[in-house]
Structures are given as structure tokens and as C-alpha cells.
Amino acid sequence: MFFTRLFALSLTLLVSCIIQADGSGTFEQMCSACHGKQAEGNPALNAPKLAGQDDWYIKNQLNSFRQGYRGTAEGDASGASMAAISKSLDSNKINELALYLNALPKPSIKATVKGDAVKGEQYYNSLCGSCHGPDGKGNTSLNAPKLAGLNDWYIINQINNFRASKRGYHQDDKLGRQMKMMSSVVPSDEASNDIATYLSAQ
Image (cartoon, rainbow, N blue to C red; front, top):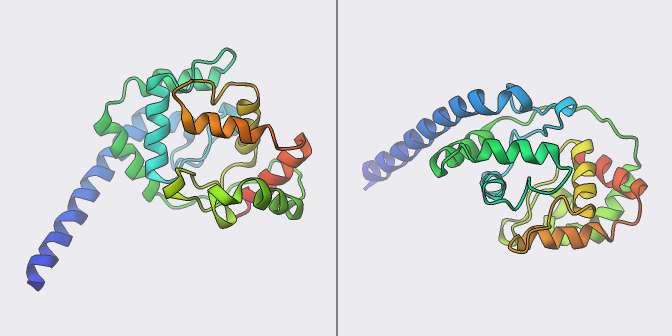
């Protein structure tokens, strides 16, 4: 029984390594030019850090781009680029990418926004924490992704995108529409900066 379990575990690990290796090739070919060689992100290209993000969320968002839930709003140039790229990925490639990115080590990121992290934590706990979990670690059961450690500029951009109907606009995007509604209760740009400062440091 022991050896049977050991064999099953070894086989699972082997399959996972093969999938991640395939994801590495797809990432290098399709994604690294914008998102960085280690998926550390590139603010000059509006490409966020992807390393260490939840694999289920990466799959969800790539499929959202494929289905037109994201990247089809007027004025969303970055989203349009992602929508075009996602259409060249089949389900297997998306799964491989998601597993590869999730397994990458968390890179250090530089703060680009001057906000008040203490106020940001208060805003986060009152507006976001019930879904996204303590310290922004995410909540899979609520389909709420990890926000901790995201680029501060990206958090702000996405709050603004929800407000401007560049995200959460599609009638079939239930989760996006929920976030669009929640973005409207962030009281000010200053509050957005505070929330982003707090989350990016987690």
C-alpha cells in the first residue's frame, strides 16, 4: 500500500512538472515580452505581475478575454491586446500557463504610489476583506482572487477600469459586475491609492 501511494504521488508530481515545463515555453513565447521574464510585470507596458497568482484566477481571466468579457470595451487598449493573445491559446495551454505562473516565486516589486497604508488597511477591511480575505490573500470559495502583492499601479488601474465600465460591463460576467458595483463605493482616488499601497506591501 505504501509503495502504491508513493508511486501515485510520484506520478502526480511528474505530470505537474511536465505541465509546468510546457507552460514555461508558452509563457516565454507569448507573454514574457510584456510581463517580464519572471512574470514580474512591466508598468511601462501596463503588464502586471503574474508570478504566484492563483492558477484558477489566471484561467478565469484568460477565458474572460477569450469570451469577450474583457478587452472589448472602448478605450481599453491593454485589454484588447490581451483579448487578441488569449484567442491564440487553447484550454490546455491556458491550464499549463496558469500552473506555471502559480508556481513561480513571488518577485519583489517597487512602490509607485504614495498612499497611507494604515488608512488603506481600514478601507480594505471595510470594503474588500469580506470577499478577498484577511490581508488580501484571496478566497477561492467566493471566486475572490489574491490581491496581496499586486502592483499598486495595477490595483488603481483596475478600480478605475471597473468604474469606467472597461471591466464588469458584459451581462454574462457576473463576478466582474459585482466588482464594478464595489468599485463605486471606494470614496475617492486618494482612498484607491491607500488601498493599493496597503495591498502591494502584503
